Length: 407
Ligand SMILES: [Zn+2]
View 1 (cartoon, rainbow, N blue to C red):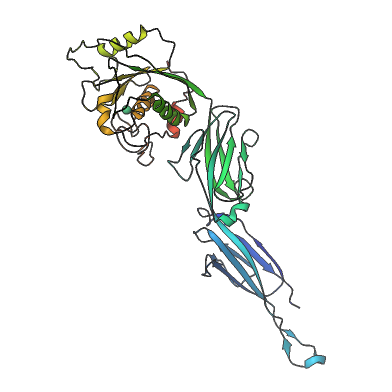
View 2 (cartoon, rainbow, N blue to C red; view 1 turned 135 degrees about the vertical axis):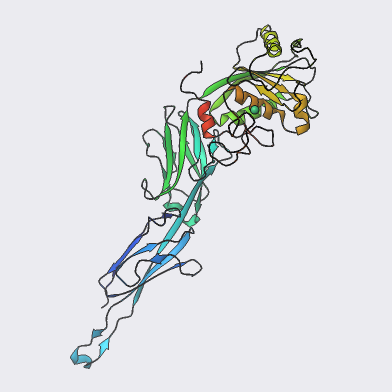
């Protein structure tokens, strides 16, 4: 009788790792083997180190999918006992044994319902931001979907960071992460085959921050209306933009106010030209100081940042100006009008400067790569205005949480 003991050791395999995670297959006790593998459409897929031996290794194809590996086994014909039929042989039919192998690709991406941030500048290893002790979500796409029950989510820092679910129920799968109680930790969530690193299907780094509370006051200067594109710069729009942009970096606006009446101040002094001196020269000047002093005479409670909304500076294309790391930003409504861009974006951008954020790409007006990442078109700190520029990346989250106080 043909006797077969057949086992196939396989693992779910990341497409980026198929070369190094090739399953080892083994069949024994019989003496003729024929290994084959095929994709769902029946075409041959992957390759064996040897298709005729008891042991072989299968190297998976680069395309995620479900594959069938088959071993056909046959023994040598037996000699039929003399008493039954002298000189003849008999042969048992061959047996085929198959196993299904999922070649899996997992990709973490942003959950549009997230509370904090997600930085996909480097899609292979994205960053998630999270507040100390709080929970947020990301999405894992699993391909093929049939492999989802074999995909697990875990963190090596399991004692401090909770990840759920432990096993995917389908794809897309919402993955929830609860941050540890210590700020400054860098943690990660791994999608894998059930054990850390065995194999790692996808990694999502997690940056943990203590919440930074911020307060801002928006002050209209000299103009009775701050009309831009036919509408006043709406407080609710500013609030929405600030929360969306800085929430990514675990900053919370505990107070967003807008003065009910304009600040009246004659700032025109040096030069006396009827225009506010905003020049690209950063730092304070006599005219900025005149506005700041007039504001302080209002004796308002403490705000981290003050945004002055003005009609027009002496500089034609300037939408706003702020000194790096300082309290005050100046926004020029008349210069933003033609762009059609939400002026709340200009407010959030200038506050970004006040909070120490530079333009993406380096210099004051530099344009392009952000720390080696692709051109960051939707970054809040892009040097020019444009639609939907609100994202902040991991290096910017870090800047908003300085480890040492700014002097
Ligand atoms: Zn800027």
